[in-house]
Picture 1 (cartoon, rainbow, N blue to C red):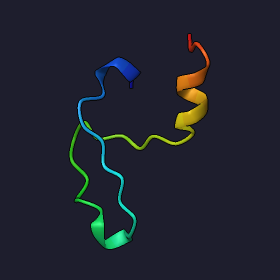
Picture 2 (cartoon, rainbow, N blue to C red):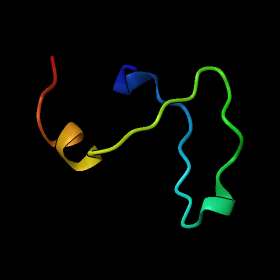
Picture 3 (cartoon, rainbow, N blue to C red):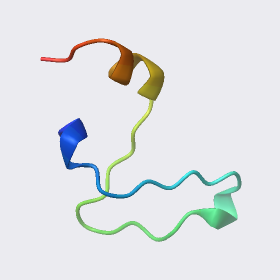
Picture 4 (tube, helix red, strand yellow):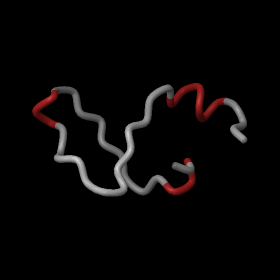
Length: 40
């Protein structure tokens, strides 16, 4: 996943808020670090 190809995000606060997984989806964790440092 390239960060510049992200077109939509979800920020669920409960498990029930998660939409079903679809092709092309990806989990993103560590966003603060990912966006604060240049990534190769």
